[in-house]
Length: 99
Image (cartoon, rainbow, N blue to C red; front, side):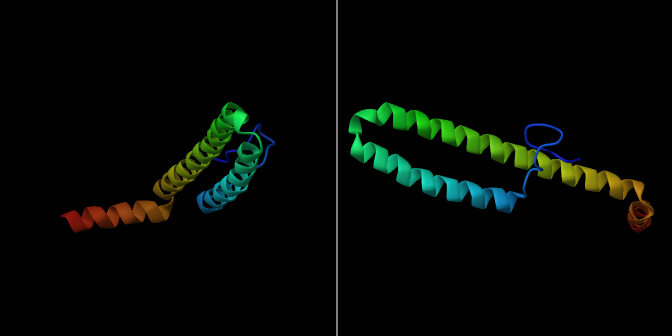
């Protein structure tokens, strides 16, 4: 099962390591921007805080989509293995060994 962003034709969700790296990079770039904004205008604390919350919410959504995609891939792989002759053979061997 392919999980895509936005629509059926959207970009496919990246792997967990790739998304973790993207999130780390995004946080680092945003931190500098937020710090500059706050240093220049301390009175904009509420705006910066809202921006931080919004960015982390979007990053959390991205991570959840990636986790869903990975779980789906794993589930699909297990289902395919159960249906294949190799999966049936492995089950047969396990049953024989259990006797």
